[in-house]
Image 1 (spheres, rainbow, N blue to C red):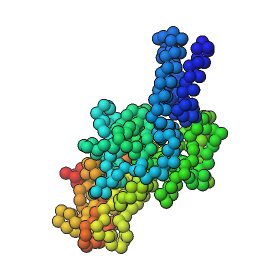
Image 2: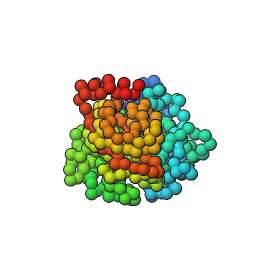
Image 3: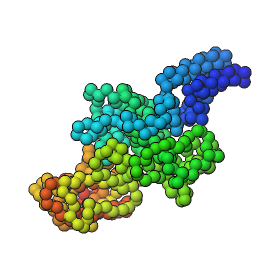
Image 4: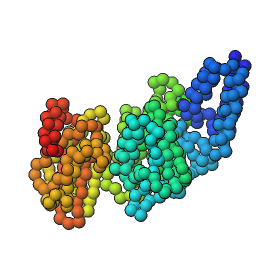
Length: 407
Ligand SMILES: [Zn+2]
């Protein structure tokens, strides 16, 4: 039997060598080789499978060669010879006259309802916190369309551009955002030009040719261990229990989260696309935040968002101080709170203004969005709020109160 395996594997490796280095194959490609052989040989004679798979592999990689596409870092598709495009300005999506970057994700109707909702939720979060907006396609000639898989092109390539967002193990909110961030023009965080000051690559434990370093510009923003674009400590490890990437000098710093965009992920999108968005992500289990300049008066014409995200927990929010310009219907300055991660989520507290005590609030899920807006005249000292997981008893009591407030 080994005499039949040998030519198949040789043809396979030769085909791959033409299109990309073997070490840059991702896991699914490596598994595909094995599975294809097993399925084929369970139905057909060895020699038939041998010829069939050799031809298929060769045609597949000839196609990749013709399209000049190569895979880097496991999930980024780049046109051959354009690795330097990592800083390419023409890779960015254009801004509309209203300052927004509008991208159509194409139809999701071929997906299961749960898959659609996961993708919508992940993209909605990007749209809420940045100037990148995902819209229904009308006449756009450059747009993305969702496919099964877990990969993406780097930046805008023009025309109809696929992005793989649907795959087991790749459906976390942060994983979907990770692939979409590649399409927006972002590389892996640990591929940054300055990464060696922040992480140590354990080359002896790496089974694939990932972990390359790019000549990136980094936008003048700090290295971000908590980015959705950062690999996890054991990704692509050749030895169980041995890490491939270790933060320095503190190896206990968590890396590789896929809960959702980090605060710096949001800042980087807005900076890359030169957008003036006031958005923050609060991912810790407790913390506090306030209006700008607090306790001095907040500025006129401000509009800020805080997304609170606590892993697998409800969120308990309390206001320690509250003083906003009063107006009828709170149409001038106001605070508004949503039970979710976007402005299309159910409203937990509608526009609220004035001075004095504000009710405590609890979100039913693990995200809560706080919006603060001021108009062009009259300010006040603003607000200060704190949040935490809360206790079950306190949360239940608050939920009962809040249902009556919302009615
Ligand atoms: Zn990636």
